[in-house]
Image (cartoon, rainbow, N blue to C red):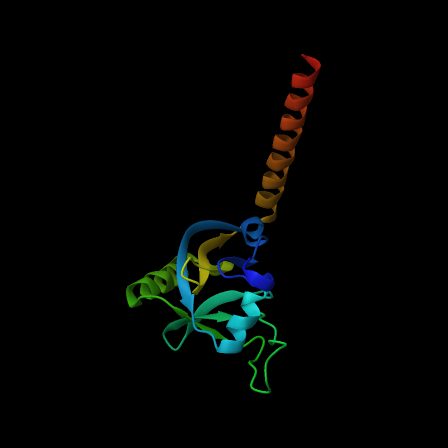
Length: 161
């Protein structure tokens, strides 16, 4: 956080549910085409990408349904909150991602929106395959067992003293 609560670099929005709902095979960093009021709103840390997805439109990749609220200090020239936003990738990367989505039944899921060290807004996109319900249950069981195991080890360590 920079002065007066603004984010100059670091994570703005994170889709933590994506790792629960999908197997993330690969990740790609993409630039995002924004207007000024969207950048200002992001710097205040206000965005939601939980219901968001990436997909093709006119041969390019776009981010759909990402919620960036209107900037409160702005004039009457504001942006649409859920408009499609173009992702900035090299043509070869776009072709590779679109081929993987079309061929293997994969999907493109935004994992986070952040500002890099130079202060430029970036989106981390995951090439993902959907989890079935039993996969989610197995992951929950494993997480619960790991938590229980670490608790038991802590207790055992205290009683040995």
